[in-house]
Length: 130
Image 1 (cartoon, rainbow, N blue to C red):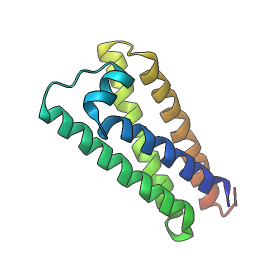
Image 2: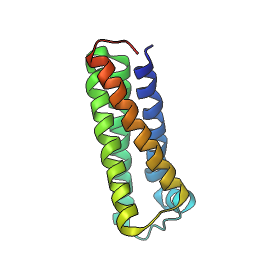
Image 3: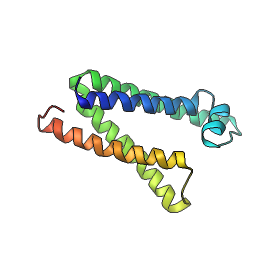
Image 4: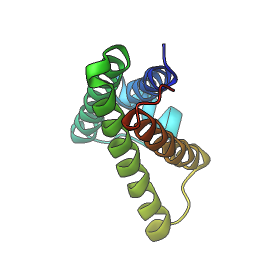
């Protein structure tokens, strides 16, 4: 299996696990993992919706890892996902201040993932197998 396929799979697993922390039991997971108290059904609904989105995109990345016809678009979708989420975090750091260590770690991973996505995208576009 090519390096970009492994990258898609490993990143998908990581994002899926984070999503389970958000959505399986938000009343337990969010305070335990992130120090965020859940006070309403609306908050639970929001975190479960985020879980569904993360699981769906993770599944697409796994499909891309296993199907050459979808691999390039899966990498592009991962680039958009990581860049979007990372940009939101950077905006928050600028406007709101530095969050806890876990969120800064996520930002670091998102930046690295976006850069690796571009690397793999350019290699695939040039026909170089990674």
